[in-house]
Image (tube, one colour):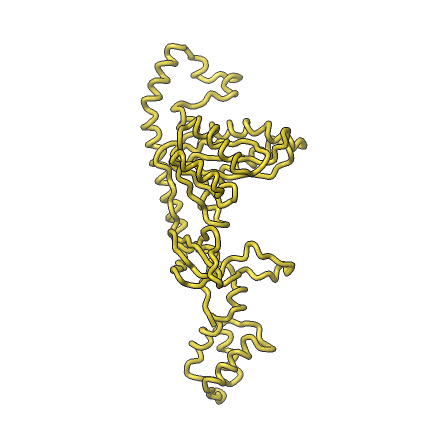
Length: 367
């Protein structure tokens, strides 16, 4: 027979939970540990399990210091462009060592269909630089796009850029704060460009702007697994002639004849739509495979309008280092704008700018 347990009333039970959990000798134990401690100390009441769970769940310090979940909160949202050069992702890359002309940044854009990348070295991050790049590198070369996906940097959210794009009927879509997956194509392009520049530069880091064209050419003529084609082939309908073919003659170089070449070019242009349709099917199939794997890790964390949440502490870092709390808040969900995307307001009712992905939010339980 086990020891006798003292049955506590409501006030005594609340005191026992509070003192054991966050009192002078408490360490904010979880509900199961808290329950076992109380039982071992000889206490009991009929609703012990429910009360310990509710108390721990609503403890402010426990919520602010809780571990950050890594499982995605919802299924993957596919993002495929319906035709070439209709949808672009755009981002900045840098700062780099200063290049001639005081250039320190790259503005990068990638077409979601062909994977064609445009990039330009610039001196600063301004809306005017974005507008100039958009006109010269995208509109004048590939016609007006339907959609451009951007992050929420001030250069991209400026009224000037929004007015400029509205004039041409270009839709701007913004990725949630601290959620680069929403503009994954641009992030991937940045990674590839950075890798290419690193491998081409030795000690002369200031020459990165001169090497940019070489890196872009390599990217445009490289086979992509997602499409089964190179960006060059999906853009022009033929495979690019690369420098190695002039040193070690390929079959098409050795058998080149102007008249036959002209006929072959016309033939390739007639078949380019079929080539693009095949690429679209490959992209769709690959997205489906990736989504199936991604969705196996999903742990649903539904958040509704009007609920209170804590937000990942990205900005209010302190000198506490590793003791800095991973969460801050609470904030109120004022609007659900899309799957796993919300807008917030603080406790005073002031609207928090930009949208937030629920990956970086957790429900807040009031004491």
